Image (cartoon, one colour):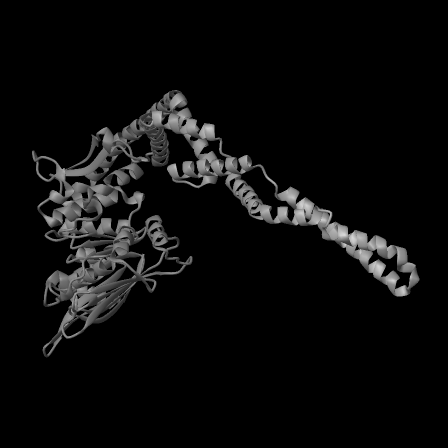
Length: 554
């Protein structure tokens, strides 16, 4: 509910801080005192269009801050805040601030985080329900009529939404399968040709890297082949270095015993022969390792060319060719087995549609029964509100199939006829603002158990009525406020007497400066204000006595 409203530099209000509570709060004051300014200020934090004319003359900017407190955030508020990425701890108040500059610009904040005005508009329906002389929101807007009737009638909206979701999912799967089959059929010949090429190529993942490495090794062997052949020729002949070493070793062996140094020389020569022999062996092994079949190199290069050509053709990597082949095969399989799958999906979609229609028809029956009860409940409230010649009807009309949705197959709108014989028309078409407000009050009373915004405001609902009708209005406002918070701007002493908190709006002038102020009245102040409302400018003893009787009577 709304707990605080702080206004700075809005029209005639220089600075104003108001505290609100549960129950019925009434706002009274003489005509022109500035009651509409309060509603305009509240409208700013609810996302109304910023109007620079609201900024108090001589100031650069105005601001309005509203605080709302809840035991648990309303579902609509929680969803909107979550989507905007704003977190509020349990028990933390929701603070909405709107700053309006004299040049027409404005900024909005929720708990000191900058937000768009669109977010304020998204939060507004769950925060404040305003019913005024020319209000186009709340119950006047037919968009919310179906949901109100559903809550009143106890319609299983959750089951209906599930059935719609299942049907929508089945239709989406069917449409996707149909599109896949049609797309595949259009390319069937090309798919077959491409798949045949890939099947003949038979690519293997990782094959390009293996072939590239093998080709590099074979190309290296070709480069080294001449050098290895020359080395082998040098090494293998009778006059090769190894042969000369061996001859020298044999000759030295015959004389090595003649001197110690000759023995050492023989040992060194033997080591040289061993090293040279190992070099010869390694040269032979290297030649063997680098040897290759020229045809094998040609085959590797041709294979690489074919693989890379196929990859360029299909605009993919070589290693993606095997997966591409599987994808093409799957698309062809979709053509070959698609008809059978389509049959199954069509059957599932028909079943889901039938289940949805059954749920929607059950909802329609519940709505019709609920509409009859609601019409009777509203009719019972009309006579005490001086609307005894009026009629109310909850109109249900079937929607074309392309308009069906999670809420069912029906459009719902609240209609009224204000005079005998007159045609029914939407609520907003009533000419008299006072009649509209009283109709909405009757509807709110009938729907009292169905919830709504955290705070309800009625602006001059009692315009043009008095006596018993005003008393009936006051009694119903008090009844509505018993379970929450309701604020009423009123000129009726009978309504004002019903308030649990009474605010007096007054305008004062000092020289050329005019200001609006709001005061929370105590018990004596309430008696005095209600007496003024009864008697006019001069408060008479009779008016005070009548005010006392009104206050005692509630």
